[in-house]
Length: 259
Image (cartoon, rainbow, N blue to C red; front, side):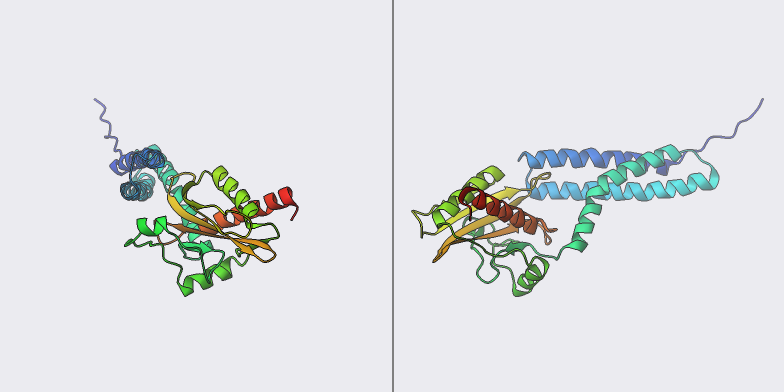
């Protein structure tokens, strides 16, 4: 009777495949649940952290399994490859954020007016006592903002404050921001203000935004402030939001009023 040696299969490769395959659906489910409002942010962040941890372990185990398979010829190379693939897929947001972390300064609050930024009212009450309060940026943060985004400044127009506010309000509505407070100018030469909540595209994080329209002797001006509620780094999100919004205001004012 011919005896065959027992085929050895790498358990580590199996664990890598299981953990990697588990991390991806967890991320998808949590993202959908949070985006739809079915899961609070605190709980979602914890689950996302666990999913990223599972993916990191899966990637490490896949590397160990690959070494063992190469060294003694045991089975499990396919499981290790699949586990690594799932892990890389799950960790791709981490890699993207790591690049953004290095490319942008560590700020949580960006405003066109760093000396006298528009103040929050509704958000100030909601965020009182939290790590990310609605306080104005520190002098160090203001310096980083001005150096990193010199183009993010107060925009001035030769149209009245009522007309500028009309353009601004329409754009806020089209952006899909949830307005929490609005003070509309009674006419030209009056102040206007919009406070709103903007949500990120994929995960649905809530950020606070306030728009201020002020009259000037030769027309009016607009300031915009955007800040994140969660985290210690906005990864450039606030600056991109402000720049895109004001560029669109520029385009619409010129298209509608020619100035």
